[in-house]
Length: 156
Image (cartoon, rainbow, N blue to C red):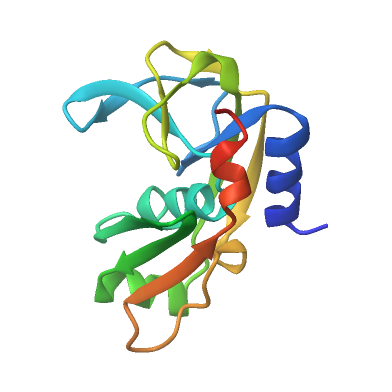
């Protein structure tokens, strides 16, 4: 079983959400995001892997994502700068996905949940660029990835 399958199975069967990070630690603490202190987590493995490997794992690069929801169809555009793309193409960046129990979270939108108090990871999984939901390609800095809407309704 690959890391994506392991994470998807955990979301469905262990009732957890996924938090991507550049570091492995036992206790996850809120950090400043969108004007508030919060721990952000998602039921979507691809997004958690992106956050761990690209956003948190590659220092000095600029990356972001945008979610598209249209009549129960979900997609994420992952965008990386050229420096980050170079890291993905020529280095071996890695990160961590923390599995966190969903009962501590409030649903912000279908993709993101937030918690406001520190919590312990149920477990962690090291992820690499091979686990990303897209294959980095020379000269391509944007990738649209469809999402399975089933995961958006897991904790509704």
